[in-house]
Image (cartoon, rainbow, N blue to C red):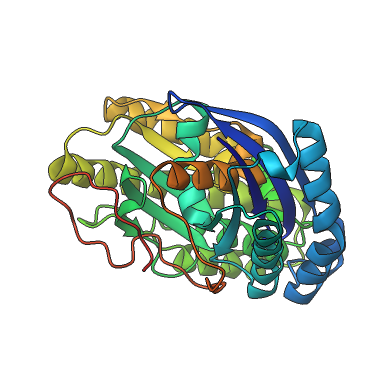
Amino acid sequence: MLVLGIETTCDETAAAVVERQSDGRGRILSNIVRSQTEEHAPFGGVVPEIAARAHVEMLDGIVASAMQQAGIGFAQLSGVAAAAGPGLIGGVIVGLTTAKAIALVHDTPLIAINHLEAHALTPRLTDALEFPYCLFLASGGHTQIVAVLGVGNYVRLGTTVDDAMGEAFDKIAKMLGLPYPGGPQVERAAAAGDPARFAFPRPMLGRADANFSLSGLKTAVRNEASRLTPLQPQDINDLCAGFQAAVLDSTADRLGVGLRLFHERFGAPRALVAAGGVAANQAIRGALREVAAKARTTLMIPPPALCTDNGAMIAWAGAERLALGLTDTMEFAPRARWLLDANITTPDKFANTRAGF
């Protein structure tokens, strides 16, 4: 089957065509992503109104490019998938409305996709990974450890109680006067810094649950930065290095607990998967390798282009759902919030039930 996927939940306007073959394996025929970094850089963060306007201006052309690169016409599509949430509601409306129009005109099934589910299912596109597996999802405003048991069947093992990891990196960058987007800038500065100069806290270390907390760490960095003002370049490098080291230690501890909880409730995971933009951070990747080795499991991280927001992951999630006969009506409403594990209780068996309803 051939599925068109549309992604507009934040500041990437994206469309892709993915083929799901008869044996369940996937193949990306096109994957077009247009970042809005330049539009938002002057403001130091994503401005929802600007993002929505950019999606309106660019999406039709990006969809056309994705179809042209895939070498197919709309009549050949088996389905049209769009990220229907969670995300900035203006952008979500643009993408879902476009998908509805295409589906209606060409009498093609519509699949409304939870953006987080698309991240969760990406390793099945890239590596044909079998269920169940443990997912570390660090994307935008989300930081979660999730047991991925089947399509639509997810159990959250841990989550952030305040700031998400990506948000914390961006806020630290803004605090220290680093350019937007902040995450890569913090990683770059940390590489030239001394991680031992500051005694930053390791949030939630040693707790029995698998939750995250980064607000206190962020405050500790702010306090040190205020004490050192005016900051010298090496101060910024050292602050970033100390912050990142604390995040790595906390993440390793939290994931260790999450993997233990997974094993106790569902048996051994087939892999530890990292997804979302934070998974592109090389230092975090190194920490994840150590966690996976200690837990005696395989670490799987999709290619960087599929870790950040893209249309291929939406198309693939649509293909996975369509293969199970799961489609949506034209009345499906866009959602700013959409829990990945809503209405799901801990299952005794792996079942394909839909999350979020």
